[in-house]
Length: 394
Image 1 (cartoon, rainbow, N blue to C red):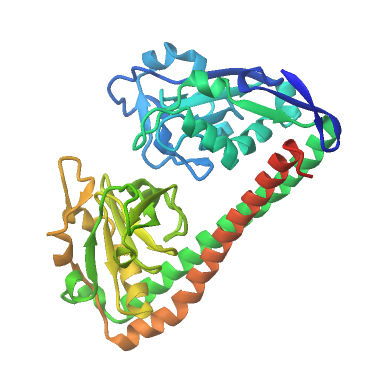
Image 2 (image 1 turned 90 degrees about the vertical axis):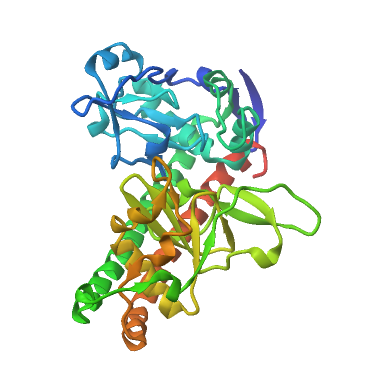
């Protein structure tokens, strides 16, 4: 540990994460979970940590005796869960309902002392992990590319800078304000999407589409298969590459950024507005890309001729998420079938009906996307402020 001359005077401390004052322990979860126990203890895996929260829709459960053998990671309220496999560095805070649950080997559990929580150390570490500089360090220390894995030792050795108390108090207040605004924006995006879905149900019911024979997907859009990530070659450009998990983890039907890029000829890029379709167990999820993108392996991209068609197709596919499982392939049904999917029957009304629906739905989607983009800007602003001061840029 050492002190450095900070921009607001002496007092900045840089130390390894495991040695940060206020951190009680840093552990990883259950190594051998055994068979699923439907009545067992919920276990949070890396894939369950989505957008800063725990997704409880498909939790694994372990037998009580396995849980008892892994008491070090029996969760408490306000533990910080950090992804060690895949989206390394993503994190979520446990809430009272998670007390007594456990974590998988793919998740690190950072526990804080009462004094550390009172001093805001948990909040500081969570935001520090979100900084681009930190993410680069974590990726540099990880093994593999497609399935990056960070060791617990490397996480413990991560360098963390802490400001003097007066500055930390001010920055924590800024973080708190940003988090409250982010939460409001998430509700706005969610409610706007729900309203669009409700209007779709009203239009579909009013036109009697639920009782009519369908129209094949191939008749209303162009279906494009996904592809693996590619390295840079002459004549190619860097384009956002969407992994299936990013589509599946999206809380709204919008994808406006990806974690990885690929290198392709520009004329092969899917333009903004392209629909991306990805499967998970028992369901298929559809989102609209807000950026130029290349769909990843196992996914499909859908190009429509107009915004009117895109709006109806997006909501039609969302309403038939469970039925679309019949268009997947593979033993675990984790890839879309390029052969089956175009034959799937849709409810497709007259253009006048689709136009009236689009007139209502487009502004709702625009509001949802604006709220999500404001959240990105808020996060970047807070991270820039904390890391900039740590580096003496203020």
